[in-house]
Amino acid sequence: MGTVFWESPFVLDPPPAAVERHGDVDLHVPAGDGRRPAVVVVHGVPGPPEAPDARDWPLYRGYGALLAEAGVLAAVPRLTVASPDDLYAVAARVAAAAELLRADPRVDADRLGLWFFSGAGLLLGDWLRDPPAWLRGVAATYPLLAPLPGWPPVDPRFRPVDALDPPTGGEGARVEAPQVEGAARPTLVLSRAGRERPEVAPTVEAFTVVARRRGIPLCVVDVPNGQHGFDALDHTEESRAAVRTARDTLLALLTAP
Image (cartoon, helix red, strand yellow):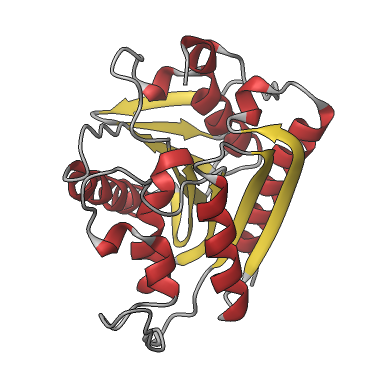
């Protein structure tokens, strides 16, 4: 991603939300009183080393405001990845951000969602493999859903497709994914860019095929003319509609009985 990406404005213009910085986590707080649902916004990783803190990008400030506009308290943790080994620490920070939200008296602790972007899609596996009962929905926007060719070895934990269809260890052999006691798999709201990067698109396609074959709840939001990062780079009505649809679909999951 070039500098233009992290400096580009968000495709929508929601009213700014109040932002509270709690260490490495920003909270975007909706107006009003009472307990409300919450979402952890998991920004793309790794970011270019010269990029500013992703929490300050117009893109993620925009998503925080967009969720707050709908009455959702959003947490955006700061995440840094320099090597595959850093994914363990990043995964722990995402889980900690969720617990920070659940402990906040302004939040309904039983109505949380997670929204992953770009390379953060590698973190999806934990939440699909063993979802907590409070996880009402998951969104992924132009996600990377498998390590790229040429990467150093990556723990299978960070291969989301294996969370749906785990290998046995034999060549090509697979076993049934374990059933989760007391919690159904959350619906995944998947936003796909029609002009996705050629190295990312096959990972999305492979994941989608397995998810549908396994009956995983999946809601696909297609952006036929969108590129990777369409929500910052493609200021079109198609992009704006896709972002609204993803937000509203996730919101419906959070507020369902």
